[in-house]
Image (cartoon, rainbow, N blue to C red; front, side, top):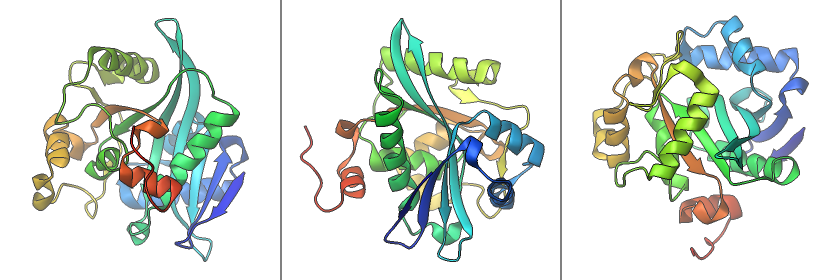
Length: 249
């Protein structure tokens, strides 16, 4: 377990799934249930059992205000090693939206795991999302990711995405559309659901809405992003390293 106090007074803690307490699990489910409809405790526990790490965010009073579960693993594609971070349940309470704690500490946590346990091959983020806010994080912090509005997905990246998504989600992944459809999807509650019309002026958000027309009913768009320092945007570099962004190669 590693805890870091952030400038926003939100504490980020990386915890192995096996080390989560009963209180941790109950608070995580409670936070998720407040923002997603149809999240039973059984479903939450089943999804959590498939993950091996969780990043927890607590406010100064010790209340859980956000978390992200992860399955970090190594596989092989075309007989070459690939390390993968597959995001699971992720939520930040709107009261903490003004702080960049989750993306900053998530990247820091992934870097620590990469260095200590998953050094082989390139490291990729396999992200599935039914929310435009999560999809928008990709373009904020990463230079290259797929799918995206302004470039077709290269054949090698599409194959990698298809292989990883099929390996992880089986028949729930539709390669033709790039959508993962679960039998019991999580659906955002009304206060978070939908895309405000003005946000569709953003081409990334408009693309997400077009590629994932079933997002409101819980359809998840499968995305792929290489997690490498060279792939950080200038905003990503400032967030991770602080101060001035490093020169972009």
